[in-house]
Image 1 (cartoon, helix red, strand yellow):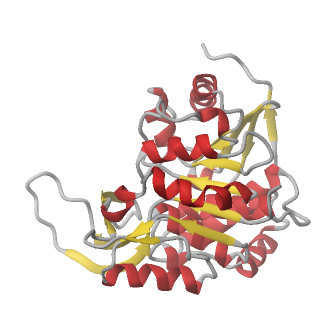
Image 2: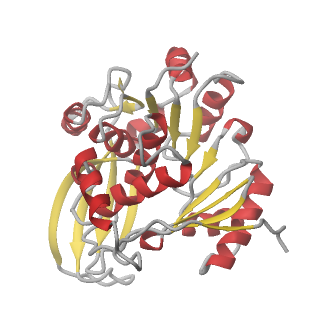
Length: 336
């Protein structure tokens, strides 16, 4: 039997954010506009997103024993995330992500795994029972793939959590037992990397998602495309789910905000989030709020903020910057 909680198994980083007018070319030096440190890491970001929305969420991963670890534990605790299972590893640095953000709010990221690379099968075994009781389990690819594979094999065959895999940073998934994954959520760039196919338009995304679904046998492929929305391919066909256009300040944690909010809406359905399409709309709103603020975890929205945002979209005819959430289903076509 599982409970109503969400488990997040993944990375914890401190983000070192440098803001620039434009990204430097090789050999070029540019003057930075500013520098800041924020708690981040795809796993911790998704956990904080869930916690800010009021969900019962637990974080699983590893930190060093340095001052950066203290920042991350404080951020998790402040969002109501249960971090009691997060390991502290002596002699290893806490993970960091060096992030450049330009004036167009685009970003480039380089990650030093640190303690995230020490999350191993023994750690999974110590927490397998608790992980198996969650209603939803969120995974990403910033911890060793061998560890994720072991975790997926340790989960109950039935009755355990619905696993949502965020394939970021994108890399080969062949080592993972993907039959245990309930949904995969690439963005359009990750979908292109995973399939080797273009994803510039809706038709391209539909074909690439079909190929990814056929290769992985994951029944639900949800492709994130920022303000344009998301595209769901499942047993019922292909559905376009519009997003919300806002004035972006920093897109760094938008995908993490989306995944956390999606899990929150699905784990604790209420009026307005009681279908998958409605949960995606809720997630779009959380992500839209996030990109209007700097930093990763500090930018995550509360449930009341998301509800106010959605209330403000009612009656807008065109969906830009918001609007009625219109669903469009297309019969699934086999890849060419």
